Amino acid sequence: LSMMIRSSSRSTRAALLRLRSRSVDGLSHHGGWISSPLKNRTFASSSTGTKSAAATIRLYRILLKKVNLLPESSTFLLQPVFTDSSAGLEARVFPAANNTTVSTWYNRVLHQDVWNHVSSEGAADFSVWTNRDEVRKAVRGSFRSQSTTPRPMVELHREAIDAVKNVSAQAELVRNMSVSEENGIKISATSLFFGPVSAQPRDGYSLRFGYRIRIQNVSSEEDDYVQLLGRTWNIQEVPDNHDEPAPDPIVVDAPTTGAVGHQPVLAPGHVFEYVSQCDLKAIQGKMKGAMHFARVDKSTPSVKPGSREGVPPDATSPDYDQSKLFSVPVAEFTLEVPTGGI
Image 1 (tube, rainbow, N blue to C red):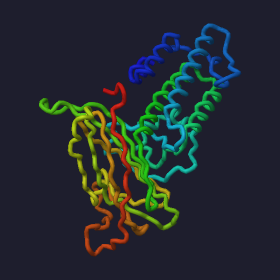
Image 2 (cartoon, one colour):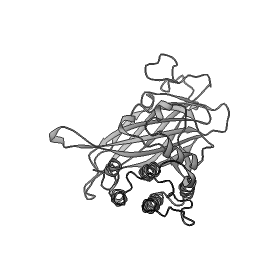
Image 3 (tube, rainbow, N blue to C red):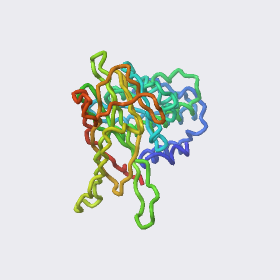
Image 4 (cartoon, helix red, strand yellow):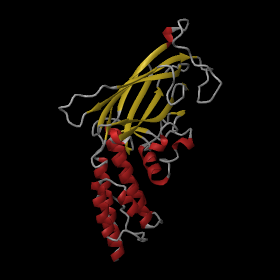
């Protein structure tokens, strides 16, 4: 619990410290879990049960408060949190999980260590499009379902604390996210702040941001296969002092070199997802661009780093059928250090 407290945000840390003062550590009583989050609570009459009940109620309220940071009226993507160790490595193609429920996603948060093993799991989709009401229902359902569990109370409390941290991270991911859809391709982009990185003494330090790009072929045509050829980026720093002029943007023009070394072929209903990173001097920036594609035959193989199989379409060749080439914009998304993030 102490480790969780140290790694949490300031507001969450204060609440968790109050929890620790109520002797949450070491509790093993089974009777204090909430059978209904708002009424009909059943707790043991012992002192330990009373403390467990108080801790459970407080955890539930903290978790709902974090859920309320999610957008109220829009649909958003819940997804695994990524770290700086994911950059360049977490690139994979998989079928979209169209029937995943928020409750299933929430239970994965609590009971499976998917956050650090997404790339090794490979074929599974751990994301779901949803809204805030559905997330709130999943939280309430989870608390209700624990009323008859034989597991120790301390384990349930720790899972709830993990859920607080993960839902807080979701709020940051959603806040920074953009979504665009054209030509049967849906692209979501979001970012997280990784932390300061060392630099030359005369230059000071830089701030590193990671970003995840999710590209889904949502075409309804059975044979509409597409291959990602490359990308274009425009990364703009926002000066800390708004009276200062913005520096020149960082431009990445790589329309034929793939993304993190990959040029995947996507069948309808499949997703390509990858994580990369960039460094800024300012605490805030914004990023936008485009992904470049070609419509290909379904027998076309994906091209991966080090692979000699498969030759992607030469989009620069005048002999190539230009009608098969198209681009999809990546709507502007935010690179931002959260409050208390440095």
